[in-house]
Amino acid sequence: MCKKTAIFIILIYLIFSYTSILSAHTENNYSKEHHHEKYHDDDDDHDHDHDEDNDGHNNEHSHHHQQEHNHEHEHDHEHNHNHGHDHGEHHDHHDEGIKLTQEQIKASNIVVSEASKGSLSKNITLNGEIKINTNNQTHHVARASGICQKIFFNVGDKVQEGQILAVLDSAVMGQAKSEYYERFNQTAISEMNLERAKIMNQNVNKLLKALSKMPDNTDSLLNDNNSDMGEYRAKLIAAYSEFIISKKSFDRKSKLFKDKIISENDYLNAKSAYDKARAEYFSVRDTIAYEVKQRLFEIEQSHKTDEFRMYSAEQNLRILGLTTNDIAKLNISGAVYQKECVDNSCIYNEKNAKHSHSNGEMFSHVEIKAKRSGTVIARNIELGEEAESNKTIFTIADLDSVYADLQASSKDLSSLKEGQKVTIVSDEEDKTIGKIITVSPIISEDTRTAMVRVLIDNHDNRFRPGSFVTGKINISADNLPIVLPKEAVQNIKGSNVVFVESDDGFKPVDVVVGREDSGNIEVISGIKTGTKYVAKGAFTLKSIVVTSGIDPHAGHGH
Image 1 (cartoon, one colour):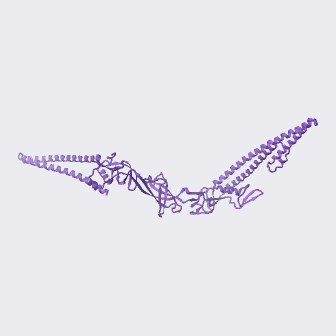
Image 2 (image 1 turned 90 degrees about the vertical axis):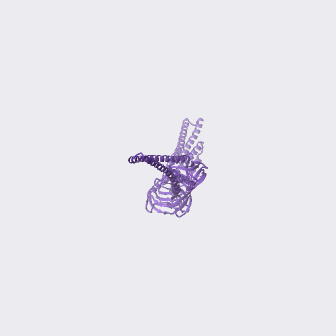
Image 3 (image 1 turned 90 degrees about the horizontal axis):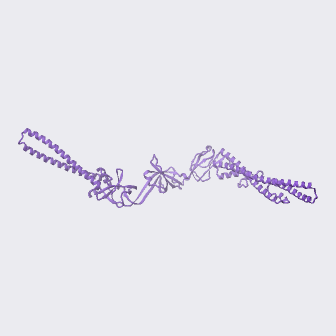
């Protein structure tokens, strides 16, 4: 309809121009005919004074001269007429806009409205594919290389966290467990030695404190079987006893010597024996106090070294995939020394204080356990096949939530935001509501689209990874300052313009547009609320501007 209207207006314009030219041409022809008739009348009068030959020559020369004069006059007249016509059009369109009569406006179906607030609403449809939620996907690898002995699950099976997926026989694991057993038992023995050293140190210090009170009787100290001091108690008490006896002998002989009952030689012998016994006791006392303390320190350092070595061996097992519970089972089944065993299968040998377990696992076995509950979506191992170190042998995914990766063109990206709701429709017409969690900042060079990721609930397993889906997104914006019909905004020479009604006619005004939907478009700047504009028929006015050479920016700023 717009195209027909434009052709109609152009046709009116051409007819008007043609009529003006035809009128000028008719006037020129009339002038030439009138001048030609006058010339012939004068020529007849002149024939009475000249002969026939001269009359013919002069008549031909005058007729030729008059034709050239009339042709130049006609050319000048047409030039002046066209110049005046073009100047009049330029003045009307640039300064006064495009003026049309009411009949022309009606014939062109031009409708004028006032710019006002409005809303936009559109639906964006994107195509995509269901993908696994990578946050809910776990790859299970063989930390230690080995031969597959057992397989318990296949692709598609449901598994629970902690269930054994497969069992490998690994020499690497056997060696690592053997080293851990050795370090574990050595640490247990050194811990036992450390506890005894602490008790001995405590008891010896207690005995030294008791001896410092200089008791006369040491029978109670010798008969205390609950105080573990090893050989230190015997050495201390023996030295102390010699010291006490010599002291008593010296005290008695000192009194006898004062009473002059014994000789000085006997007194000196007693004193020498006393000094010797006292010195030996103090030497034994100080040596034992130092040895006990030094022994405790050395055992503590040795125990720390054993603990570090055991920790290193334990970390090696963790690197190979064993969990804390797995290592706890090793401790139960392999400990030489244990304070307490809670395993029902434990058999305790009192002779060597060793615990043994009849249901212990094979030393070199590696159990591949499920790290999460979900569905087995990949299995890359067969019975008897060697699993290389760090090779993925099972992949488990929780499919209760999946991604819908949609592809959006660049023109739609500005309308898509994180958190927006999306209706996902499968090829089987299954529907669900998801929300956008990612809008990729990168546009593919191949497809010129960007990925829009939607998280959807899939607890009923209706949407299978790999299947194609469609995403439908409703975009709405309310209370926008100015919203116009799309056909009101025309693009002329790269600029968006709106034709504004004024007393001087319809003027094209540059505008800046924003968002849009299927029928309307937002105007950010260029016109104000209440401005009268051409809501319908703007294409007709654009056609006049384009075909007549009018400057489309003539109305800029008005």
